[in-house]
Length: 593
Image 1 (cartoon, rainbow, N blue to C red):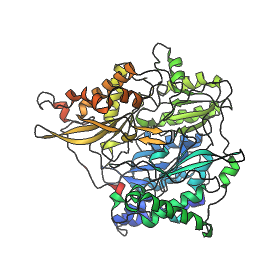
Image 2 (cartoon, rainbow, N blue to C red):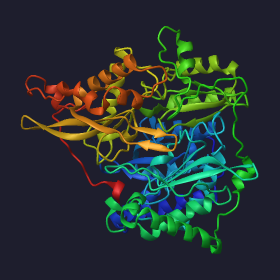
Image 3 (cartoon, one colour):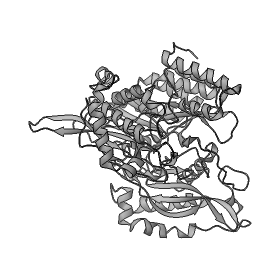
Image 4 (tube, one colour):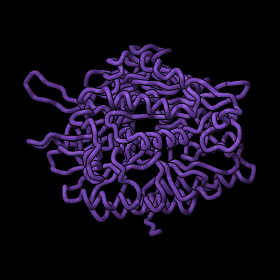
């Protein structure tokens, strides 16, 4: 690979990692000390144990260059197993990286400006942003430069190195909230303020203390309006309050969301405002318009005159077709995957990544497409790629290129697009093979002709921690160990009606528990009912309420909550992708380290 000069700060990170790794390997550095250090550098242990590691690379607000995407292909081949994985937090992960080879991998990544620093651990994690920022016809501000400014401000920041627990920041350019700000420690949504003199000021509404996990909490609005000049000081003030008050004795109650339970929202709000007021005295005061915003701007894409936009994103249901059946392959892809309506005249289009997995050959092909078409590329929080800054004349070429690498399926971000965490493949906490279930649901949807049903999303987590964000999707599954006929068996809890958008969040409501092998049939039944009964433009949650609510829908699935005897259906006692009897094995979680 062609390498450029490495940024001195990243070079220093890698040199320090190399030194501490050698100390650890020689027995000089204690296991628990090295674990914290390793996690803060984005290196995460796998359930396989030994020196198998997961390398998590930050991709701030999902934005990637062709050289960076090419580098991912190199990392996949040279250090991993030929593929990478897009996460729901816009990171890129590579599994089965040997610990001794991590420094070399980090140097390769740093040569194209990528880092794993603070991608794990009790730090400020990857700063997320709407993948259509700068290309969305509804946005108030293009949040790209703001997300970049936040990423740069908190990377290596002394405040962010040993927090009580991880800290997440997310940006959305409008109330549609494609970035999913409503379940983060800090969620930032662009908005406007109308002044008495008739002027309109663009700025932000900042939400705090959202979170998922076993006890999901909705984010709460800190104040009605935060000016552009005050945004970064506000975020830093929130971080400082978390650092001062977060629970350092019990990691299970250490996230920002628990401060609302222990201190009360009004007290958290009071402390944040106090911190912000006096932050001017800090030597690193981040006030004013950040350099990144002054350099790159934040003007919104705007809405083209006379064009009805057809966006695809979390919460957006405008102009979504009820059915895509009967069209040719390109027309179906265009109807489902192309976003139009920006005043600048460009269009965007999604490339589908099954289960969020990308092979090294696909990485290199995507980089080639980006260079050929001169477009931007970002990864989405639903584990896909979006190509931005396209013209209408590019679409057939893009479709042809994506089709050649297996990424042109229509319905990226729709019903075909089942999202799952890594599950028991690699995670110490997972009790089920969530990726296997996602694959099985996708296959059943294809068989039943339901893979392109718009306006519906399915998310799966291999445990209650919601890394697959099952609480926020129309259909959610959470892995659980079940008991049947004296044996441990893989099972799931099914949730219905999760929703994020329009500055609100509904967590999915529990429907029923199911054997893992019956979960695909349950998903198919619900999706078929929704497809057959929905009214034009009706959301899943709207249909669910009209259909009698979660209990009524669950009543039609009760027959699926049955385990046959082991000798009648032995596959019910084996999880997806496994060959032997199910065992709910969990290890020490580095999530809570």
